[in-house]
Image (cartoon, rainbow, N blue to C red):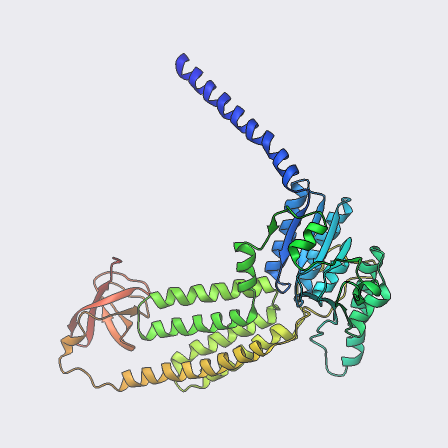
Length: 454
């Protein structure tokens, strides 16, 4: 025992020395390679971008890196995610650290939500051939008769928000407020002719031909450029309401198709698609009203199984589409971050991105596909219902289906087999939904037993 204890002690000491050796080398490596954290964001401002930027800022803070450069190229995006990013930037700066937004490379821009993020930075830098501005928000959910007053109120609120962010960092708030009230953009055409620098909406323009050259001029030439990983990319993909609507409706029809042609595989895939759609809608911050309407529309589509006239399916698709449109026409329910200026956070708009042509294409596909899918399933059932009965009653033996009611041993229940409802009996109790196989035919009843999983 004593020998074993000494061996354990020796092993622990060896591991401790190895750990301390590695730890001792880490600070030197970090200090030698990078005293600045560089992250590159080349996408719309969405939950994935939010996750990437905020986690990168937290990573820099925990690593003791006091200088952060965000390479930005964005059309804009969600207001709530924008505010979360600004809150993270504000907390980083409050600790006495420097946050720089670099709008690069040539052809890049910081529009809408991106311009707010840039102006919340300690320093804003641009390279030739880039643009900043056009920050007028998309106002949604305006009641009839209140369009002018509500629109003016929201624009004024966001203009004040932009002014506060700009003034905190010593830039021209008059020029940046025009980004909001008039949708003005400021280009940086060349190093000697950079309107953004001339109007004071940025701090510096660099005569750089590439992002790498710009970073070198900023003293971050050897720094690792961090890009979004798996989780941010997944969040960006799944938070797209266009994709979510397709997943949701596709999941419904996969489950319906599996009812007509029992395989269980389609049901699992359909359920997974619905879960992903609901997860994405929740991540996007879709209004609860829109989600409820989409669920109600799905229930109407399921009701078609009982009505068989196509009315419920069409009504379900229409209700589903209304719910989908409300995602864009109602404000996001996401709470505002605590870092808003004393004048209050802007309200009444959940996004800086209008409905694009992709949304209308998806809308057409959802509507047309939903109605065609309903008609297809209806005709499949009608065809099966009109199929002449088999000459040999025993031909149904071996077919599988599901119980649609509870079966008591020796009693009679109902099962859907081959899209037909049959009276069945069995020797053991089986709950509703159990997959069964026909073993025999006794008078007017089919004898079934539970299908054992392979």
